[in-house]
Structure formats: structure tokens, C-alpha cells
Amino acid sequence: MPKNLKEEILFTGMMAGMMVLVMSLYNVMRVVGVNGTAVTKALIGFPLGLIVAGILDLALVGPIVKGIVFKYLIKDPENTAPIRIALTISTLMVLGMVSLMTAYGLIMTGQIGWSQYFTGWLINIVVALPLQLLIVGPLSRAGLSRIQN
Image (cartoon, rainbow, N blue to C red; front, side, top):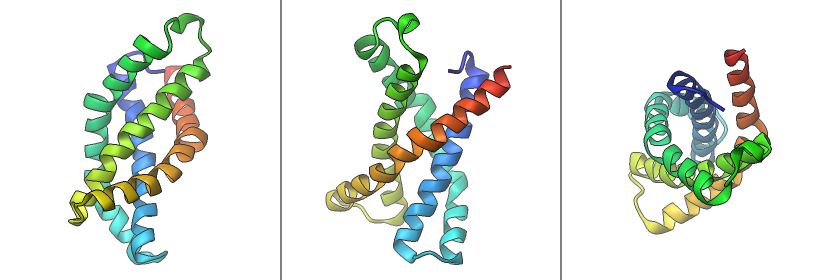
């Protein structure tokens, strides 16, 4: 886990960068198919998506999730397995970020409606949760531990 603001920003950058890139590619390819146009569109939208995701993670979702986790779910962090803490935070972070970034994606494409939101949310959570828990989270934690050592 990050120990200071610098590490928190680096960790968030790694995590958000990988999640935004993969989820952008996934969503664009769902709409336009698997082709060069999809990759180009995803890469064009990547910088702004990364900035939005980073701000939402650091300023809103992260503090809320950590407050919930350490106030209600994990009362004794020093005697709790680090993997349990990481998985709990990661799962709740995905729920929060998918909720907000699905809305962001729909706003950016001009598709604003509850039906589109709930469909998009379900489609995104199915990919984002395993992506985070099995690939991006472990890679980001490994990257952070290399920085810390």
C-alpha cells in the first residue's frame, strides 16, 4: 500500500492508466468492432479519461472507500492479512469507479439515459472487476513494491 502522497499518486497512475486503457479499448471495440479505428479512438480519448479517472480516484472514490473499509469492514488493519485489505479496497474501488466512469463515457459520447447507464454499468463491471483483481491490481502492487524497495 502507498505510504505517502508521492507513492499514492504513482500507484493511482499505474492503476488508473492500465484500467482506463483496457476499459477504453473494450468499450470502443464493443461499439465499432475490433479494428484500427477502435484503437485510434481509444487512444485519442485516453489522456482525458486518465485525468478524469485519476482525479475521481484520488479526490472522491479513494477517500470514501478507505473510510468505509477502515471504519466498518476492517476494524484492526494491523492484524488483518494485507491481501484481504487490498482485495476489499480494490473491489469497492471498482464499484465506485465503474459507476462514475460509465457515466463519464456516456456523457462523452452523448448517450445520456438510465437504460444506457445501467446496461453500460453491467457490461463494464463484468470486465473491470476481474481485470482489476487478477491483472491490474497485482501488477500495480508489484510496481509499487519495486518503487518502495
